[in-house]
Image 1 (tube, helix red, strand yellow):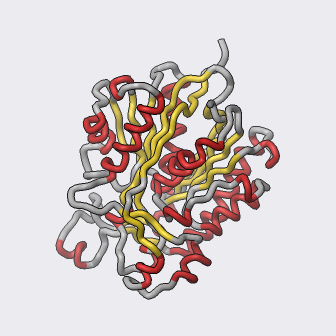
Image 2 (image 1 turned 180 degrees about the horizontal axis):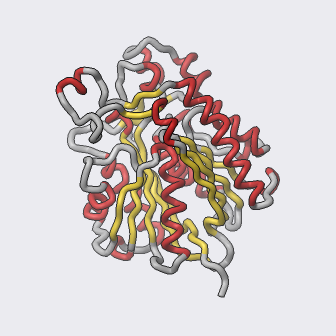
Image 3 (image 1 turned 135 degrees about the horizontal axis):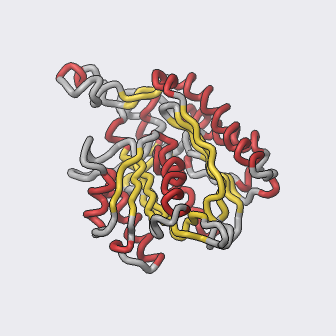
Length: 329
């Protein structure tokens, strides 16, 4: 009996139509295109506009196209793990809302919250259900409507974030492809540097919290950058060393798209050459849980069966980690 791995067998993404450019941001806050580009690598980001639209509404088209590509129906999905920091509501889970919207009547599901590391946490979690034999079709979604928790008067954060979602299907593989290994870490002491102050049980919504603008993402940029630049790079190198992989063995490095300088540091630490590093931060900004699935979706046609791919992320928590997978198709 050959070992069962959880392989990605389909991927699709969705980015809203509205493009928020650096030029438009210049009219909103005291910033400029050159400053944003040199520090973050971001030129534009997508924003979900329209009344009554939420994170699940970006996941719906991604999931529907994924199912179409794979030639399966929604009722074949057994489990939905929705990785998000901006759920449609505090409860129920966005996974449940999505299941209803796409008609996944036989699926159970839940949301996973690990900020920007959520999607790789979700992959590692979903893989367990496949490897154990419990399930055959697991949907892992990463998506965020970051515009819903961004203060567009705060130039430190509003230049970074965008909206978007992506989904992958995990299925059993016995050919040696799929998710081979992961190293995941967290340190709650880092919460002081990156969080949303109000809206939880610590500080429920009140006139005071709204007036104090505490329902937005708060970040101490320098501290977060310092932790991210070392930890994300180190954990990517660690998963490679553990699996005896050199930079030459790696077909693609897929880093979380938070900042071009953090991406470059991760590439340098792993030794992976620039032509093998997937970057779309210039067009989407940081979509939090959406970054890695959007990268996989956009580069899907360049992947070959058996390609060694390293995913790496860092996020609020702090959370960070890396996944080593072999592409299955």
